[in-house]
Figure 1 (cartoon, rainbow, N blue to C red):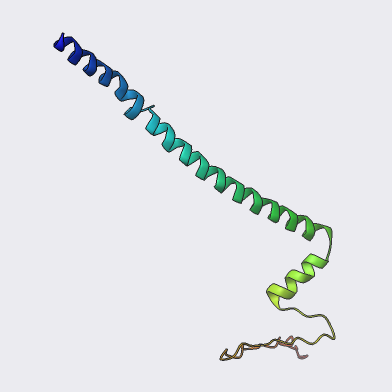
Figure 2 (cartoon, rainbow, N blue to C red; figure 1 turned 180 degrees about the horizontal axis):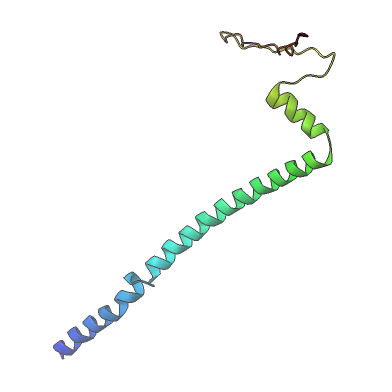
Length: 109
């Protein structure tokens, strides 16, 4: 009788092993669920970024205001007759300003 009990316990453990620790067991399922949750968060962030970029593209296509804003911010462009004022933080070096060159004049020969 005791031998039968030991055999049954061993068979039960043998059958349970793939369920808990095998390739398709509960531990692997839990690990995959965590990976899916992390990927869903990444996907949501990328969707938000794509929506923002699509809105910016639409704005750039539809009007000149966005193009003007971008030129002012990224290239430092100003309109005719405007004065550009830049406030520097304390201990910040003064930026180097380069003035555009006049086109070279070609003399007559």
